[in-house]
Length: 177
Image 1 (tube, rainbow, N blue to C red):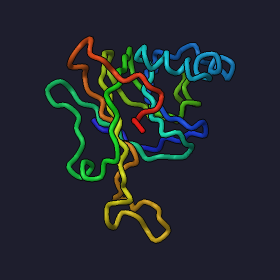
Image 2: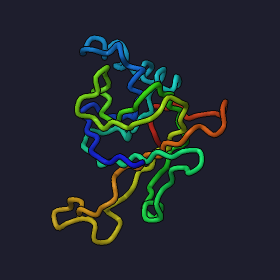
Image 3: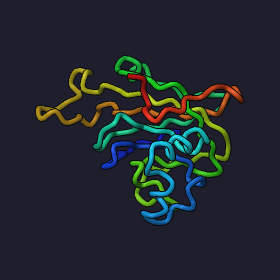
Image 4: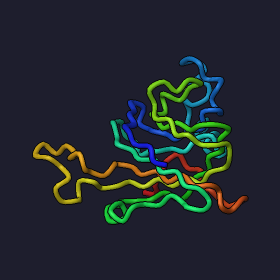
């Protein structure tokens, strides 16, 4: 399964998050108490509720999320592999129902206009890839905007957890600098 869309953030960070983990966030005050500080975000990452898509900047980014299964793991396409800038180590995501991709400021009990990723309950290994779509010839128009056939800015691979009790990345910055 593949979900494609735009992830926008004015808070400097996007995220893939487990919808069932944030039922208590119903307004700004409850959001602030759960996700305002880095240590709060880090707690949710370590607990498997949130995977940061974080390059430290605001913007709107094209995202593709690919969901695999144990018999057919989600992978990068050959074309994506050619233009990977950097890849994250795997993060853990634990779901009780769907996951959502959005700016971190949109994490809440209701997912509204965010990208919903249908996932069954389970433990998922998630890797994030930053793709340099502009490096591919012919994929930017004269104004530097992506052509309709351009690759996404981020590819997110979501696969069933293969090795229970493995070490997962827990840093707020998605990629090593």
